[in-house]
Image 1 (spheres, rainbow, N blue to C red):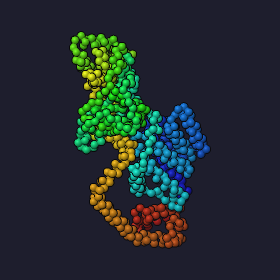
Image 2: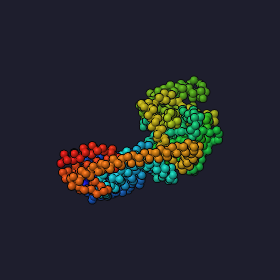
Image 3: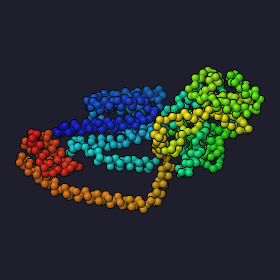
Image 4: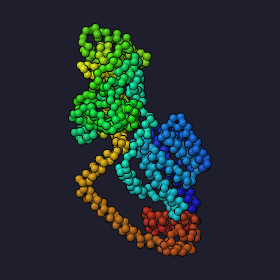
Amino acid sequence: MSADLRHDAALLRAERLTLAVLLCGVAALALSDFVSPFYWLLSAVAATLRLWRGPSLHLSEMQASIVGWLGFGWVILELVFGRELIVAFTDFLLILSFAIVVEAATPRNHLHRMLVGLFLVLAAAVLTDSVLYVVPLLLMMWFLWRAAACLYSINWPGGDLPAVPVRKEGGWMLLMVAITALLFVALPRFEFHSLLKGTQPRLQTSGFSDLVQLGDFARTLDSRVVMRVEPLDDSADGIKQFRRWAVGRYWRGAVLSRFTGHGWQKVAGRHQFQIAAGKDLVVADGNKLSLALYREASDHAYIQLPEGLLRIKDIPEAIHFDGAAAAQFARAPSRRLRLLMDVAMAAELKGTGRPQHRERERDKIPDELRRWLQPFVASGEAPEVLLERIASELRGWEYDLNAAIDAERPITSFLRLKSGHCELYATTMALAARQLGFASRVVNGYLGGDWNEVGNFLQIRALHAHSWSEVWLAGSWQRIDATPSLRDGLLDLQFPTLDQLWESARLGWYRYVLEFQNSDRLNFLTSLWQSVRLYSNWLLAAALTIGVMLLLGRSVAQLRLRLRRPQREQLCSELDRWLRRRGVVRQPYQPLRHADLPEGVAPEQWNGFVQQWETACYGSGRLWKKHDLQRHLRALLKSY
């Protein structure tokens, strides 16, 4: 192979490697669920076409620069029309990556691809929540290493040698991963969540807003996990105790007190107080069970409060807490929310405030509901007994998320169909209590959840969103859930084991990567030091064993080299005799590639022979025998 052909092959290899670096950055950012697919698909499609057609499909540097400047102008317009700065900057990076993909393949263009790919990966590190981010990150490290080595070797002595085999670089990749993990643990953390507020989309859950229209609940609910709750005590007894407490638990969210005729509206309680960020919310004292709650993206600022709440530690944002036993952030929290809580095993969280006027209003109760209650009232039983009879009647109806409820007259159609979702059951129960003279309200939250056997934590899905009613009885708020129990069979996963493995991996990613804080680093280093002290003898023995094995391996390698040297010298003598017969005299220690072309040998065949010779004698290939050398030399003469 001539020098020009080798150079072209190296450039083609660099073209593919630098494109792979850039595509890794695009893929890492595409995993973020707020990046518009238009921008990353533009770069991905262009890169795919470029890999297919090769460098012939390109624009000049001036044309690519014009594309980049047009993208910059477009991003300025996005900012003018209200686009968030961090999102606009990401859009510009993706447009710039498209311009660099279609630019002519030059050394400067290869450098641009590598730099923009690094910027994309860094942006994705902040903006991507998916555990799959680790895949393009590792691929980026691999392709970046090989692309840099390829570009460095072009136009340098030895640059026409074949690339190092992949298996030879596996050790370097492991070393880079180890250094990355070390830096991750050692470097300090910086607060960036406040920069992302209002930029990332939130899960649209209609059940958690200040104004709820009946008939809309659960229209967007699916099997995605919206909360994960794990015990902080990971011992066998701690997990067993937590599981007993967690399964079937109610999680309070928004408390709605005013009935509008078509839905419910939140009313601020009379007794409110605010707790500043960084403080603890203390409800009561008692024997505690500590847990960590991880909440996914949501469109509400309410905090899910479990039954028996004792304390919320180190609140990330200021919260409002009122007599309805509901807590709400003063401003929208970050997309990823982690709360540390202490709960009691048996006690329930109950509101301490007395009923408000809005919680006794009866003017918006539909006439159909009043008529439906008449047979119960006619029995003459005590109101408390009537409440239980009404709840039992409702629990015998059908639970249906897709019932054909009339949005204009939701309660009327619900009473006629005797079928609907939990908000309709809670509404009917609350209004019936008001008609009987009790104060009542509706609470939206979550009920139950799935226990993850792999990770030993509770995962709560969107389908677990639930509504129930609270009635003022005997001087306190009492929960009455009139929804049929058939609601428990909503979740039907085809591959539950795989789902549990995936959700466990996601929790580990959120816990030990996204939410790895300074305190976590100190705990990790402390645990590591304790393990070193505990297993120091075993570690010392393992280190000595590995050292001895490395020394033995090195000795064996040196012995093999000494054994190969006489054989290699014999091959060199045989080759020099053959060269002298064809008019070539090679000086001692002169590389074969620098020797003159022998008579009767084609240049292309000679270059191929030189490459095979150097690989066999000085590389990782098998050392030739004397008959192997003679066979190759005969092939050179026959090919001419």
